[in-house]
Image (cartoon, rainbow, N blue to C red; front, side, top):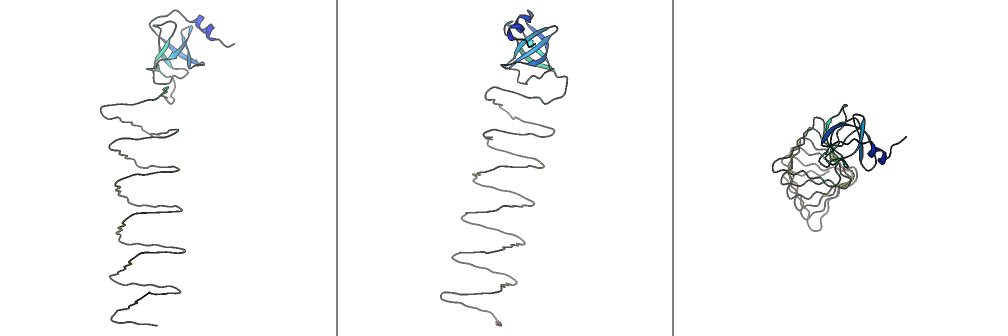
Amino acid sequence: MKSTFADLRTSQPELSGETLGTIRSRLRDDRLLVSCGDARLTCRRAHSCLLEPEIGDRVLISRVDPQHPYVLAILERPYASAARIHIDGDLTFESNGTVRFNAAQGIHLHGENEVKVHGNHLELNVDEADLIVKKTSLHCVELQGWIGALRLIGKTLETVVERVVQISKASFRTVETVDHVRSAHLDYAASASVRLHGKHALLTAERLSKIDAQHIHLG
């Protein structure tokens, strides 16, 4: 037979100050049923008790106000489980120095709407990172990177810039269908040799075509 809040209030002992108890169950309206010896108390979690109580926890109870007992702190948890900090409303960590989060296995950040990081300097130092997003916007004045190997796989790549400078020791490019280049001036220079080959080759000019070399072989 389930006990009502009225029955639980009548069974509560007349205690004052602080006492020890054990979490037995969760009730509605975020209340907790706590056993203190043979007695039962219906308590609320104190706002300063950030850690979410679990069933079986050994807790410290305040009975300064006998009509409103509170769970002040969790003293002992008999079994190993994930600890959870639960806050009603916004939560802000503020420090005049440095705030560090250290974890032996991993750190996860999740936001239902958004995750924001603000500051003068952001540093990430990890062995491996996975980034999965649906859409990303990057606004940056200057971007510098030192990469050992870069591999990009995608369907479309569009780049709009005023100036492109590329320096490489070797460059290989394969285009399966069509390669278009449109420019006002096109200049190719090779220190060793130049080879143009195709099943059909066509060279045209509106005004002047010129071939200049010490030896010219046609055919």
